Amino acid sequence: MLLDHTGLGYDSGFRSEVSAGRGRAKHTPRLQPGSIVIRNRSRGSQRATQSVRAIAALLLLPACVLGPVASWAQSAEAAFRWPDGKRAAVSLSFDDARPSQVDTGLAVLARWGARATFYVVPVHVEAKLSGWKRLVAAGHEIGNHSVRHPCTGNFAWSRDAALEDYTLERMRQELLEGNRRLEQLLDITPVTFAYPCGQTFIGRGRATQSYVPLVAELFLAGRGWLDETPNDPVFHDPAQVSGMSMDGMDFPDVKALVENAREAGQWLVLAGHEIGHSGPQTTRIEMLESLVPFLQDPSNRIWFETVEAVARHLRRHRNDQPRD
Ligand SMILES: [Zn+2]
Image 1: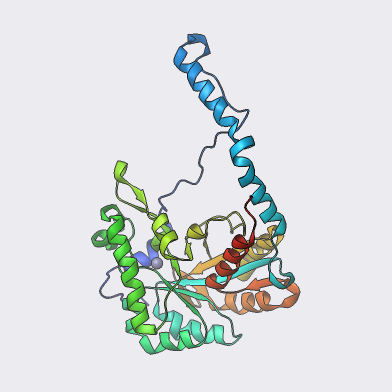
Image 2: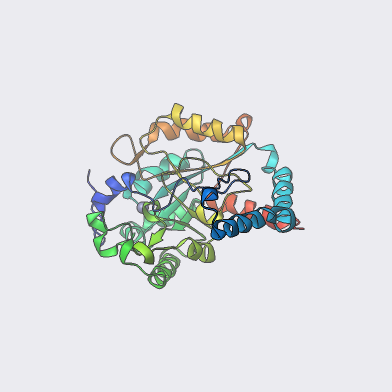
């Protein structure tokens, strides 16, 4: 069944969101000590010599300036423990307030008393308000997913709310408006956010800016989409919590993601859209029927909680760490 997301006109985008670029570089080159190549030596220019001196001065920084930061990070990592002897954390999240989330997903999760995080667009909550109120009453987290679901205008359905045409102030007003409307509709205040399409930029070319700092200011955590690794509990940036897709996946493949995260002691945030037996951008009921009991089995030592609960735990841990 095709969904009618009236008022926003991005129903086709729901299906193609999976292929969206995320507006952030995956591989950022880093300056590594010992890896400097002096290419201008044969020219003997004074400028090159000055550059080398400047880089050499920078390389001295770790000993005198970065030392306390490095030792804080090491002590934080050494001190970190998941609660109750758990070895990893897993959160389930679903985006957009798709109708199948309340029509189908609510009952599926209720079978195990499992709690998930739902990143919702207010207009879709209004369309099934009583269902969303039941979902809140069941203890699920409601997060902000903007008002107009802005993504790159390369999606035709997003042309009227194209990130390329946004300003930071417009985004700030929209995110605040999203919280206000959800407070009115559901009597909750969202504290975490999911970037529509996983994209974190606004503007174009030289005027492009990141709205990650805005999310860092307004929310406890901001989740991405189609990311490739879970989160290191100490190192990760709460404003860019990675979100890995579970749409269309079978249990063995999702179980492998969970086991890899447990091996590394990470926080895995899974993200999906529809909840059903089949179809595009659909987290499969059969997969959830195996995954949820697996996550709840104490012998698997997984902390299965909402994004908000895990993010609060990790913030407390950060605040508890001495920084000198
Ligand atoms: Zn979305």
